[in-house]
Image (cartoon, rainbow, N blue to C red; front, side, top):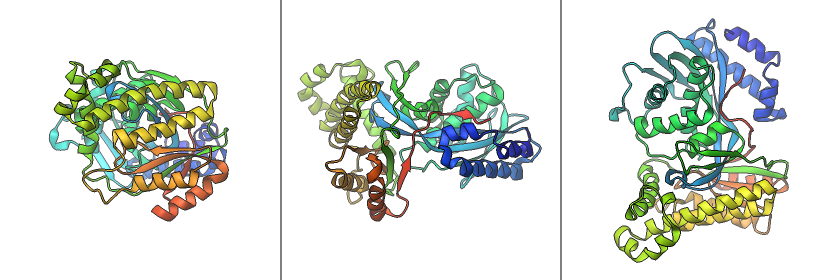
Length: 427
């Protein structure tokens, strides 16, 4: 379809079923208008007679397994109904153009930019080039395309806007040039490759998988080349809960060293035993070696390793709870995960700016408001700044939002849903 035909298809309800699944019935009209506006913007930028389709990739929330994936651990994560959407059309040649609302156009010639370039680390162009290189590395087809993208996944929110963007490039390449046959897990793996090798940022695989997979998923990264992904069919909304994400407005500038220190310190403990990652080591062995580890690596590395072992076990217990529909055990696991992240992983504030502790303040307020309630809360995402997560009973959600908005500004608290689909072509 060209842009006019695609707009007509949305107007006539061709996408209503999938939009309902992605965003809920009450949001279909608003989302339909959002997609139609995006198609119109594409037409303005790249021409209305182009052969186009619409794509969506979810933001994500991590539920448990905080900072374990990079050491081949286990996590529970979910796709959110905040997403990045794109309208894209194939183009001749080796040039990809992506106009992102609020950021302008990124242009990449993947024939010319086909190897990592440190001068371009940290740029959107490096992600596009990295995804193309990854597709070629795995024997998939690539080609030029033009795309307009818009996102309501908040940057720096712990919802993985960067992973969603990476997955989106792969999503488009899969559908336009590979008949949609590059599955979402492989797209996520290629997104990690792009971020590690071309973007220049050490990261695990959890963000990319959670954005791409859809629903609540348990992910075991024991073999990162073939992670085991289990759909956990638990309806938290049907159980009477809202998932609230609170953006504390923290400054994410210069936090790369903080994020990088977590996997590095965990892996330094593993290296002491001649192993690559902590998943290959034994907790009892680590505890027995604490005197030597303290002297060589320091206390924080040991604490972070012990967090890894506890969190890995906890994810297994929470998987069991979700399968059994045991809400109390599930909520208890979230609280324990958050406590371990604060005390032992130590990713709730940065030591570079001790006066800014918005996450600590948000967690304190959540603790006070939800005391005695059947609820749970914890640091969200990578930590150090950004957001907390809370599972709040429906009858307390508006009061919780008012409290958090009062402390951190109007609109700071978002009440969200978990959606059943990750990365997909909408029609």
